[in-house]
Structure formats: C-alpha cells, structure tokens
Image 1 (cartoon, rainbow, N blue to C red):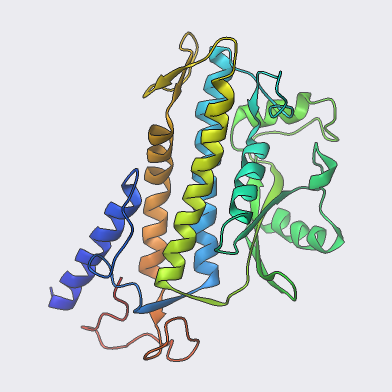
Image 2 (cartoon, rainbow, N blue to C red; image 1 turned 180 degrees about the vertical axis):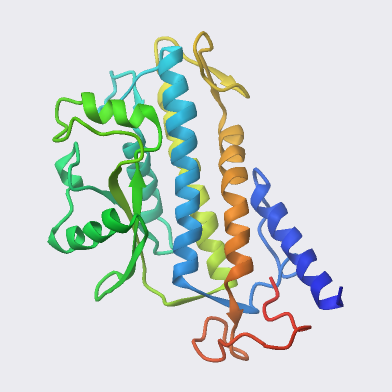
Length: 297
C-alpha cells in the first residue's frame, strides 16, 4: 500500500467520524483539506437526497408508524395551537424545505406529485413532463433551469405502510388505490452552481442535516404542549410505549443511515480543482497515475 493510499484512508476516516458524530465539530484544515477538490452538483444532489431519504424513512416508519401504535396522532393541522398532532411525513419534508430556504447554501427542496392530497403540491406542466420520465424509469432526472440553475428530480416511493394507508384513506386524496413501492411523487432539488469546492459541498450537506434537526425539534416542541406528553429520551415509540427519542438520538440515527452513501459519493466523485481556484471548471480531469491521490479530503 502506497503512502498516498494511506493518506486517502486516513482522510476518509475523518469524514466518516464527522458524518457519524451526533454533533460534529466544524471541519478545519487540520482535519480535512477542504480546498483540494471540486464536486459536480449531481454529487451534491445525491448526497442531500440520501439525507432526506434517511430522515423521512426513519420519521415515517419509527416516529409516525411507531407513534400511532403508541397513541400519538399526526395530521395536516399540526401547527394549529389546539391540535395535538405531529406533522405527516410530507409536511415534515415541507418544514425541512422551509428551514433550508432560510439558510445561505441556496439549496432548494420541493415535494410534488401528479395526485397530491394538497393541491399546492401538484406539478406544473414542465415538472409533469420530467415526472413522467421519473415514474417510467424510477431514476432521477437532471435538468438546467434559467432561474433555479441545476435541477434534480428523484422518485418518491411508497416505501412504508403508513404512507400508503394515509393516502388511501384521506378524504382529499384523488387516488385511493396506492400500494407499496408505487411512485407517489418526486423530490425536486435545485442548486445554482455546476461545481462546488469540498468546503462548499460539506457546508450544504451539514445545512441539510441542520434543517432536518430543526424540523424534528419543532415536532418535539409541539408534543411538549400535548395534554399527555410523550416520555422524551432514548426510546422509540411503539405499542404500549408512549416515548419519543430526543433530537440527539433521532439525528444520530439519520446520520448513521445516510453516512455510508455520502462517503461512497465522496469516494466515487470529486476531481482536482485547478491550481489556486477551488471550484473552477478547469483542470478537472483526474490523475491517471496509479500512486497519485487526485483529491485530498
């Protein structure tokens, strides 16, 4: 094993530790070299989409599914003062998107469908064309928009029973025959830049984690106002267990699930930035020399 390979393994160990940590410290030049690479925006979309999938999957199955078995309720009016409900999974994503919008990374997030319960989530004509391809291939579609910049649309699958049941039983649902693994809609991401420096890449990734965390904290704050408040700690809700994990436990689960895919993306992607300009589109070809480390993370 060459010294370059040892360096590469060591630096990715730092990344793994950073991702799996519940409250990671800010990355510094002493931990990871943040200026040696640039990344295509598609790599960013893949990373944040994995974070979103991890957060929504855990929230839907373990919080909503387990919570309903424990006696908690979830609905569209969860923000109303006298309503003792938590947000439905789609509203959890909408809340996360709102937090992202208030942050500087300029990452946009939108959930839409051709058969939404809330008509504000109905795709427009242009979006519907891309969504038709997403439904057909079950693969992401990438495009360029004059206003939003780069756009990525990912299929949103009916991956757990609570989602299917809710959409089939909801009085406003235009479709009542959803089954598991149907493409219920799509998650759309936008970002203005074609390339990102490694520093910018990690900044956006951490902003996504932060937005998820803020949303879950909002949910916990709501449950603290219930006439019967759930026990907060390390336990997850289930039948006969009226508990909720605290934010630290919830986010540790999200980070743990998303981290392997983010590390894979960083290993597979990234090319050397041109000399002196992180994020430049020039000098992007990877070194063909076997012993070289083309990107120092």
